[in-house]
Image 1: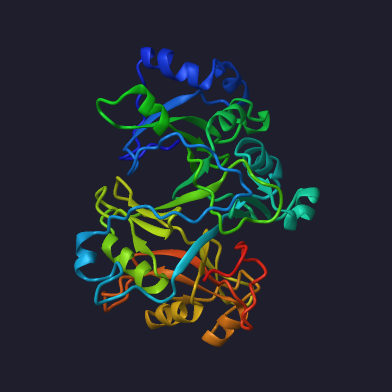
Image 2: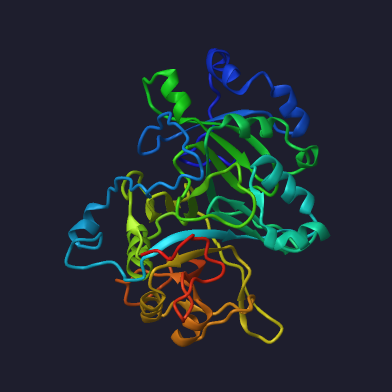
Length: 413
């Protein structure tokens, strides 16, 4: 995996390998090298916000209430009353869930897609794209509990500027799949290793509980796999068979060095009703809460360079399109979210897709609208801090019934 300022590759001493990694992962390094051209590596990283502890996995059928984790909003935003309970309140849009990430795979390489997402990560193929799986072309959908990945084809694959975190009941089974990765992945960018948190003087058992796996997809996108038996969102699931992965618990996107991090936080609060979870935990980073079980993170890159998530162009009729990655999310009040986005001038119509919303009325009819520019609401010039497309969806149709693609079991109250 690509190393960053806060995720540095460090070799763990031989004694640590003998005492910890060998019993944990098994003596399978030979099988790793047979499946991929890259050896097992160990990565050290900053600690998560709370320690992982072993928990009993509840049966999937037993729905439990959605638990809320403690939040640590930035002091400046608390003073401004933007975290709830103050004079100023976040937008009425009220984000409920980031349901999918859409980014392109290389045309003609369903073999790599299926090997990585289904055989290695253990995601489940969405039956709504079963015909494409049989034909071996066009878009695939890969499901992880209530979340999914939309993987359309393009002349070249996209490498996400950031990372994706998936949660599992435990890491033993996914480690076995990594050790036995299909040979087709050998000549791709696929690789994997162990990622540990920095704790100073800490017991090996605590390190084991905090362990994550760092996995690079066939085209260079970084995934982190963690153990969290309680990560599954009880409010719903995507169609098809259950997946080994319980959830996509975080999407991290890079921003240029020196970017207006506070402005990003204000945008997501005002337009989409996100809450700040951990701003200030690391310099140059903001963590936003999409639900109590899911976060959206923006992090500065270590070096001075351009960071782009958009691929802008025009269609055959000269209309604007964006072929870059996009996030899809559900909000509780589409009308309020649209008004907030329109007030900032960030509503975007992407002619790459069939559903188009040029107005509030059309967004209500289509159950969605799009935005592209992320701006600071306090910046009178509305200069984009970054561009990242969002498909903002309503849970309900205009008649109040549940939208057909919504993965919730019931309409949230």
